[in-house]
Amino acid sequence: MRMAEVSAKFELSQDTLRYYERIGLIPPVNRNNNGIREYSEDNLRWVEFIKCMRSAGLPIEALIEYVNLTQQGESTLNTRKELLIEQREQLRLRIVEMVETMERLDSKIENYEQSLSETERALSRP
Image (tube, rainbow, N blue to C red; front, side, top):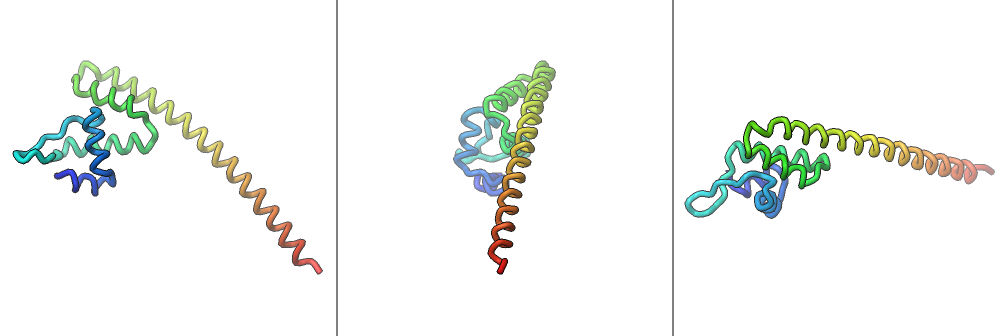
């Protein structure tokens, strides 16, 4: 699959795909005789994984480390697992913070709605 197709499929710009490859966030993509990138199924799985992890807020540095460890082979399985466990815990903490923020926003919105209702009732009185 060519870069334009990958870009459309994953809703990532071609610049982003090139950047991810350049910094080692996705393993190098093979090129055809004309120098055009040809994404393999393995490359597509990496792009999908990285997009998912970035959408969840995982830092680029942690993901680069994960990719590098993966390329080193099975001797890094435990290290990779620990890295993912650490990132999961950080994500869990961010989710807790987001839920708390959502509850605070809901409370604020409810206060405004009550205030508006009181104002409307006052205006409708004779």
